[in-house]
Amino acid sequence: MYFHTFDNARKAGFKNINCDLIFNIPNQSIDTWKRDLQKIIDLDPDIYHVIH
Image (cartoon, rainbow, N blue to C red; front, top):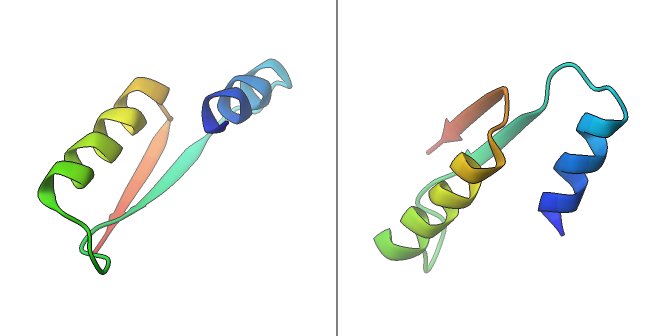
């Protein structure tokens, strides 16, 4: 779903697309963090923030 959202935003002409990543949420493992991080890398946002 979020892949389509990013794609639609780009098609609509948005100049900057950002993403906020939250680390160390309850029940989050290092494996789920790595998987989520890879998804963000694949989306290739212009800006991303990591929040702990």
